[in-house]
Length: 115
Image (cartoon, rainbow, N blue to C red):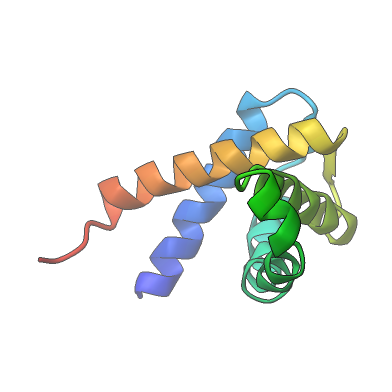
């Protein structure tokens, strides 16, 4: 049940973030659901590998290079999800940052942790 609620909140966050950002086009609810489904394996498989491989440059740039990796993951997802497009790396980086922020806020409001 918590997994379904989390997916619904992430889909809402994707819709809100795409609506807020120019340069990101998302045509409806179904592509938003597909984007969330595609981002989950990218986040858990591809991103950690890239972070490990780019560790030296991340250390040199004090972790700022991780933003580029996050943007690249959004661009990678846009290849697999129809009706979702991003106009470049900068909108992808902003989408990634705002999506994380909005997702965190929604999860804190609607899925509070039990103490």
